[in-house]
Image (cartoon, rainbow over all chains, first blue to last red; front, side, top):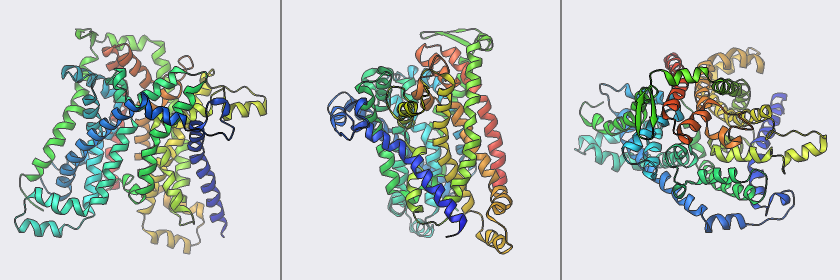
Length: 264
Length: 281
């Protein structure tokens, strides 16, 4: 082995430990009866049973409603938008580049006026507000991802179908969606994770304790018990449920990861 | 390829939606920042909100902490390049590494904050053991500077994978002949990095940095769930202050004025971003 390879291996081993250790720590914390037993081998599943049989189940349900609802809107908007940007030449196409620029809006800053909007629309303190706002924030990047996934598909089939008199809608669901199915499945799950992960929108727009999403519930659990006790370990179990979708999706969809990080 | 109404029809819904929810609030927010709100009623107060902020020492601390938070960036760039080079190698085990490397970046920030929060808590956990062994009494929950260091370390842990994956994509787009030619010419690994990789990926690195700067200045989710802005107000960055004023106390006018302080630097980042993008194309 060359010297540079040894060096890279060392980097890889250290990074792997630094990346994984906090996750493993959280797993162990979530399986410990309480904080005194974190360093013992004792393992229990009580906290997960508590989560799936108590109030936190409502939080999970709310989180799922928001994430699915939001993802559905984002997916449809970006499917049509991304297809138009990728396959058509038209005046005003510059809107595509402009979409990426929206990444530079700091979420939290826009939430103040959005609060006023939601009050006016009578959506303040409802899950609809969360669905709409999460959808809007994820649409630009998703549109761009969709464009890049459709780009990998040869356009000859579509052109032939168009010549045969297929409508654009039909081309989209008969040819584009089936051909890009795996890429689109990735986009769907990626958006789902993005919405599932965030809580700033809920923090700003939904103070109702009955409408808490899971991260808001976790936040409450953290505030409740800074000194110790059972809340630490229960919170850890909620934390594990928070990261689970991310771990599942990225261990399956590894080949799509690179696409998120390409500018062109 | 085709010339008809279809693209407009397809793009129209998303453009309208994004305009209403993402762009128009910017203008409305600016308007709000000149008002004071009592429940649902607004009263015009001119620049009073801005005056209040400029006179407010707490707000200066908020700004100082937000700027300190940006210290995340230099170490993240350095480590990001290191891991990007690792990612573009074909070592054994790199496939597994590629799967896990994205996790810190893509996981819910509240969950990763919880990991760090529980690791450094003074009651149980690794830090207590460290304190027992060394006889020190390090406690970020009572020392604001230490808390800020934990906030920054947590953010570095999340940002390095982003830089690494972003830069790895950039490095892969460099034609491999360039690297091979320089190997033939006898260039070492360091000189290859300095003379080829770094200059050719510089625009990408700057774009990633602009994005991380925007996220860091606007970050409330991670910093808030680590220490709730505490101890005292030791980690209360501008974004946390904004959230508190606007969403806890209902000071919409003041919150909007703080938001303007966040939006202005990000708009500057945007302009630089657009220039860099043109350079890459």
